Image (tube, rainbow, N blue to C red; front, side, top):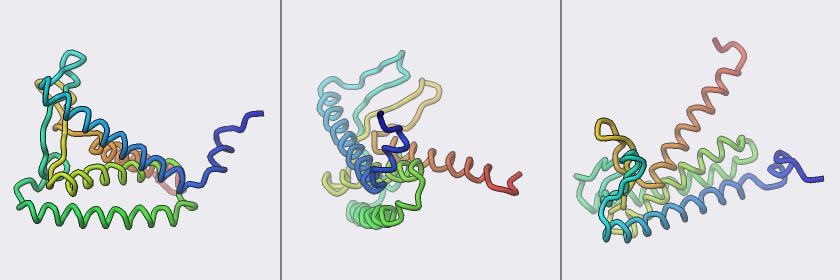
Length: 175
């Protein structure tokens, strides 16, 4: 008889799942940035689904959506290194307490850590610059330009909000 999904997940240590998610997402982020940068530098912007999805090259010297890009390069690099150290410590703490953490929450945190590491690695390795290339929307309303690391951060944070909202709703005494 095949093990059920729940049985399988109970056999796999949670820290292994978290580490797997983080490393796979960082790898996907770095590969997509590399491929997009090479392809888009040659072809220029590309649109799909009647322009709803477009890929266009952009270098971001700031944080998420360019926040802090006006700061001096040394300050940006110092902030990036500090955030990388903080993120590393937070991830280690997450793994230490993983036994008491629900799998969905662990995965959402892992997505956020992967996104942070993906962009912070770029800041450290690329003189403070991150390559962004994805835009969703239309000419009327659209997202800022972002990359897979930004999407991981955003989706992970949204998952946490939804998971905590459902958890709070299911608590006794909640209205």
